[in-house]
Length: 156
Image (cartoon, rainbow, N blue to C red; front, side, top):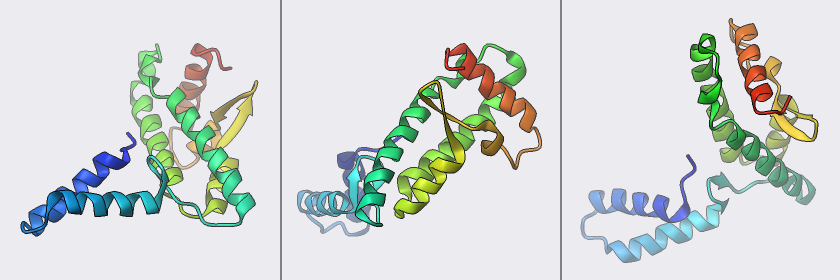
């Protein structure tokens, strides 16, 4: 889950307050909010570096990738019990990509990640199972599980 700015600021403030009890909580919260706001562009995503064109494109791609990830949030609805183990692997891999894409500071890396893992199918952005699981020994089962999921959702 993405953490909103205020919640993250409270967590940082609590950590600082535990270490330095004499710190004024409200003042420290303000400092933490300012710090996080200046170092984050939107909730859960770090500021991007690169050319103006790269940054604009990478921001758009981040949104698209996060939308595709949100579409997979109810992955547990895959009907076939045969895929129970595969669902966990798929969820872990998607979470890894979500964390990487939202914490990446280089716009070029966001673009490269998008180009590598994603494809458009009938106007909908989906994950390429062949590349998503290329290092997994059970790629065929994982690919089938993901494709069945997309099929059940009417995407493929």
